[in-house]
Amino acid sequence: MNTTAETESTPEIRGRRTWRDVDLRAVAPFAALLLLLIVGAMVNPNFIGLNNLANVATRSAFIAIIAVGATFVISSGDLDLSVGSMVAFVASLMILFMNSGVIADPALMLAAAVVLTVIIGSLCGLANGLITTVGKIEPFIATLGTMGIYRGLTTWLSQGGAITLRSPEQQELYRPVYFGSFLGMPLPILIILIVTAIAAFILYRTRYGRHVVAVGSSRDVARYSGIAVDRVRTIAFIIQGLCVAIAVLLYVPRLG
Image (cartoon, rainbow, N blue to C red):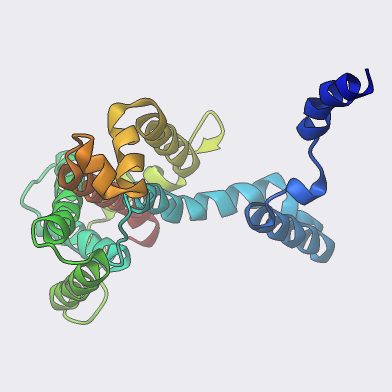
């Protein structure tokens, strides 16, 4: 009887979780963030005010969108060191195109610039993916090289200086993308929520998302399972480039 009672109580004991079961590495970033919020609130009570939190979230949306794209690249077992230089390169081409005046109507010019930016960002991601997969070059080396290329092209395009939107009409038309709001929510926050939701759906609810995780876990096992490993990795880089383009579209009206 005692043995039976002990056996029956074992699952209950095993089911209990204690503080020792907590993964400190997973909790540490959130604990550090909470500590920063507490210290900031002690220094200035307005630090945790709704307006300030919305301002911080708005400014962070630019980086967050790029991080969403990096999630796919990292989950597939790769990394991309060129995103910073890619942002500068794509933004430079977008602004130069808008300053060219090839389309007289400001609204049509902005629409064309948006399409061009998305295409350029995706092509930059495709280039990184093909160099890594078809060229059989380690992503660290490949994206380190493209980082230098994008940076050099940006310096050449800007002639070592700053590039800004010249047309006041375009600036005024484009300004609401960053400074506007919808139902009281700043547009950058709304955009990052939409991008994150779409990315989460792709990663957790689609076959491609499962393939990304499988490739990142073991490329050999994924290949033996019939997964097109190189295609999955290349698409991940394209998604990274697309997210860079979205971030550029969101941030250019702030810097102008």
